[in-house]
Amino acid sequence: MKTFGIVSNSPDVLKQIQEVAASVFNPKTTIYKTYCYQDTREIPGIIQDGCAEIEGWIFSGETPYAHAKPYLPKNMPAVSCILNGLEIFRYLLQSLALSKMHVLRISIDLPKIASRDWVTAMQEASIPFDEVHIHYYDSMHIDQNIHTVVEFHHALWQAGKIERVLTSSTKVHQALERLHIPVIQMHGSTFTIRNALLKLKERRMHQHLIESEVALTRIETVNMEKLLLASSGPLQFQMQLLHLKEKILELCQNLHGSYLAEKDNGRFEIFASRGIIERNAGKIREAIEDIRLNLNIEVSAGIGFGYTAFDAQRNAWRALSYGRQQDPRQDVIAIDINGNIQENLGTEHPLTFTASLENPEILRRLESVGVGTRNYMRISAIAKKIGHGFTSSEIAQQMGVTDRNARRIIKNLLTAGLVICVGEESLSTRGRPTKKYRMNPEFQP
Image (cartoon, rainbow, N blue to C red; front, side, top):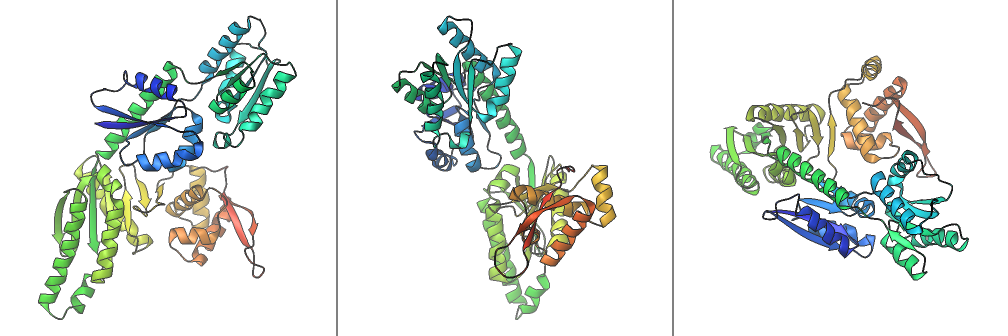
């Protein structure tokens, strides 16, 4: 049985989405859990509490989706029933019919994401903007700015500039009704909801195909001779090997009975599906740390994903090789069929990037300063994850290199024009200020 979560602040909309969903998904194999919130601050808790059993989320609009997005697990299928130009045009016609006039004298509030669709709908319909007053709001802060939106409409009503209000907010709708101002609340029609549900169905199928890929986890002990030299005799050495195998078997059990193959002393291959490995990457990381702590030997893991066992095995070898080149203590590294590299798998902040680059201008500039493609792509991915200007120390920490090496790489990228300095920050009264950088937007990998 598939379980989908539906989130809205309107019980009527929740019911409408459920009714439309019955025509898209098989009712015999699908369960819906509805969540009706009163305040957008409730949404993160709804997501965190429900994600253990929910396989996909349906949001009634942009506002709940915007508040939920930061808390959705990676690769979790989610859609929202966003008002598009067609929907807005439908409400414009409804307002025109109710006013029984040839000129629209209305005010309307919309999330900023819908502004382009609104302008396009008005222009294509050749509707004059003179008597139409628009207020765009930030979906993330609508609950805190309800008073501002209501005042916008109320002032226009008192000035006699409008005859009706179109709002996309339930709270604004309720407030205007209390002021006895004619108001229509806009929400997605059956057509919009069905399109969103079809998109969710497609994303769920795509995610299922990805999760069913073959995954191979290759675990290798780096310095097995250290264990041998520390043993008092062959019996103790064999006991230590048995402890190692016990830890690996426990890991297989945690991976729900995945197939285990022992290649030779200290080298193991675990076969499973990609979905199982990605959901339990933290357990692989914990097992490696446990082996390091209890047996005092270095262990590394490389995970390969692929359509076939051969593809997965080849990518697992590539992941191990990559880990040795970058940092022998890298815990878990994965490489998929497209060559995408995932570092720090199993942590809260994994880093994903591709090692291939096809932009000839960037390649030429990298070659001129002697910076490798892989390092450039890693820095680009780190900068994107940080989201604001980065420092050399942040790059050093994420890449597992010294500050000196990070400064050298960034200096070379500055020379190549691929990184730009955007300012400085001083965290203390002593010492030099720290320079902040950004990737040059003119050159996108």
